[in-house]
Image (cartoon, rainbow, N blue to C red; front, top):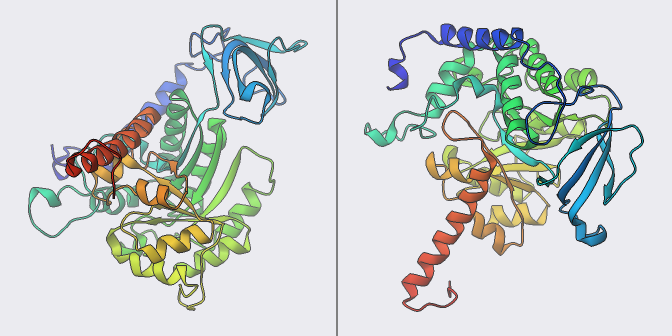
Length: 404
């Protein structure tokens, strides 16, 4: 079924989704029961401040080679107090800490998703065959599109309660998939109430998150959402929600370079000491914009440049000049391999990153089209890299390292 043929109205669809969330909560699905690592039930003291517990007897992989044993033990314990890991090793003494039996299991850090539009959870799989934007060809390759149906159709009619339930369900689902930290790229800031709903849901999920304060989807094109206060509301949000530097949920400033006056958002982000993030990809004529930023000549002032406080998402289709600027200024890069290949963002830039000795982070992007399962992200990255290398070897006519 094509999105435009959906039998119910957009508002009815979102209402039904929100009602499902309320009904689930009323069923007492989250009541505490004794916990082991063999089921999904939480310990009885889950959520208590300064909670102290120990994960016993698992195969521990810390991913930290500076630790004893290079951070890996066939059997060891992990002691947690509040929101911090305080000890890792065999046979730890834990006093009266709650215990989780992890024998026969692997204990490792959770995955970090550096780019996920969680407000779209209510629309999961809605646009499974979608591409990013209409190519104007009037053929099946031009339809349906994410930009038209998600950002310009559904997103503008979200209410704060729709934002909250989508953010909350998205966060809980990711926890179930082992993703314990997320950068929530939130393009749903039609009003301060929408912003507060998104932030509250991130706190209520109980995991680490970076709240990405991006634009009000559709506002710049449709002229809708008159209560939109992006980007200036960032100052209130930072003061009200993120006054502490030692909390699970932090803040990132969104500054899309394809929007008018994007320099305003970058300046506010830097004024507040925030990381500044943007989608940088083949469409929207972004390449010359990045070239100017790489030369310190971006923005309306012609003086805006890159810095280590930047996080760029995708980085498909950019010039060597732009890439060199990203490398030289310590910009971080987030890649979403399945989405980039499926939705025509451009070839994921794994070889460019490798040639510059840069390491990307992985990200889900949009669940409306592809799964948020993080093993899919990793397998897709490996498969694409191997496919290109294998083809280079085959085209040489000799089974040896590719010469290109």
